[in-house]
Amino acid sequence: MAAARQGGAPAAEALSDASAPATAEADTSVTASADTSADTAGATRRVAQGAPVPPSPQPNADGTALTTTASGLIDTSNAFFTPMGNGRSCASCHAENSGWSVTPNRLQQRFAVSAGADPVFRPVDGANSPNAPVATLDQKRVAYSMLLTKGLIRVGQAMPANAEFSLVRTDDPYGYASAKELSLFRRPLPSTNLKFVSTLMWDARETRTVAAGTAGASCILNANPALCYATVDSGLLTQASDAVRGHAEAARELTAAEQRAIVNFEAGLVTAQSTSATAGSLTDAGATGGPAALSAQAFYFGINDLEAGDYRTRATFNRNAMSMFGAWRNLDAPPRPAPGQRPPAQPAQATAQNVARASIARGEQLFNNRPFTINRVAGFTDQLRVPNRVTCSSCHSAPNAGSHSTPLLVDIGVADARFRTPDMPLYTLRNNVTGETVDTTDPGLALQTGRWRDIGRMKVPTLRGLAARAPYFHNGSQGDLAGVVRFYDRRFQIGLTQQEVADLSAFLRAL
Ligand code: HEC
Ligand code: HEC
Image 1: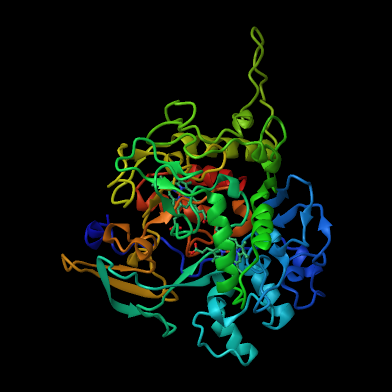
Image 2 (image 1 turned 180 degrees about the vertical axis):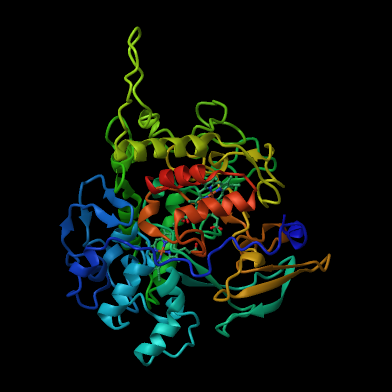
């Protein structure tokens, strides 16, 4: 856990790419919206706020992503799209064309089109420091650099009272962070596929524990003492209010009806990649990618749980969590001759499309079955009663969603000092009892619980609609999905071949 991070790990490894993001996105929607005014929803959608519209395929670097809803329409009159307080709406940071998050490319376009006036660019948490000067366009470009280059929002969190550790050093390139408010630069988690979520926010701060027996509470099986959580729905209601007061600096609370409407809206969204530039339709030839199959996918608290098995069926944990592309296996292999027939002298060449499909299918198999050993992963290796020999699906275990069906927050090392890039603040925390210190760019769960052993722990995010919302990890440190795979490969010395890296990232791009 945190203590072990002081020594041990290979130090000089540069896993994260400092110059990260700015992936090339095939972007038509934003150019088309060039004439929209300062309306934030309008800047991210081609339609005016107010009209219910059918979702349309949204282009990204790897093909298109598609959102579905129960009604078949996206109701842009919902309060989700209503500008509040400082002019922002939820859609300012959760945009359909960006996988219901934001991407640097489209933010740069919004900046250019609005000369920095789009309401996403607000000092409170859009700027690197709320005190940064933003009078001129050049000043704005500097002040909003984290948002423009990596799509990062500044989440301000105070040191908790009675923490087991103290903040002994703050190295903030923007001269703002302090124990009163640490600046944590984080990616907006997508406001879609929420039906697969057990934990809200990177650090679970909107996921409340409640007493056993509380109505609607979900409890960890066989936990002693009891460990129960309030419903995700109740967390979403509070989250919506907090977002309006915080991000949108609204002077009033949302009404209960507005809260309810927003949560009903976002909880009804289902998003997935639907076509691939190389593999074509992700629902073709027996594959079950895309949002339609995802919206029919079962999920409940404890489904396919790693530790206790499935809470409802009592089946043991099934590491084959992803099962969409099995029909595409071996599509690139030459067809086998029928029994008694001789193989042709020249086997037929697989089409480029079938080669791409077979790669996605291999990636799915690797995700489910390629074992590797994890070490010093706080929240996992020190707490779960399971072996440290894992697959990707050990943590990303919710079937065909890739989230974790019970709150699991683990430190895979993304915020470690050794991966710090100069644009990130660095915090030195000292254990009040042992005097030991840890350098981190984001203490994660520890800022909520005050516990030393929780430093760096983040929630396991859902893995659908990924291609629409680069860059990745809470701090946007990986510009593309191959970078994510290489991060795991080096962090845990998995020993993936180049082909395996290509296959795994092809699979992630097809989610
Ligand atoms: C200024 C940008 C911004 C605005 C505006 C904004 N959000 Fe967010 N949202 C974020 C960020 C950043 C996170 C992740 C923060 C964290 O985990 O610390 C997030 C997280 C979330 C999550 C958590 C998803 C998950 O998987 O845990 C939900 C749900 C959400 N936002 C909904 C909303 C709603 C609803 C509104 C409008 C009332 C809204 N957001 C407005 C930036 C924004
Ligand atoms: C020990 C648990 C664990 C294992 C094993 C694991 N992950 Fe993760 N994964 C996480 C956590 C936690 C995060 C968020 C980390 C952060 O941002 O700080 C994450 C983030 C990701 C993301 C980025 C998602 C986003 O929205 O930015 C991808 C992609 C991903 N993992 C893929 C994989 C793949 C592929 C494997 C197997 C090679 C794997 N994971 C194995 C826990 C795990």
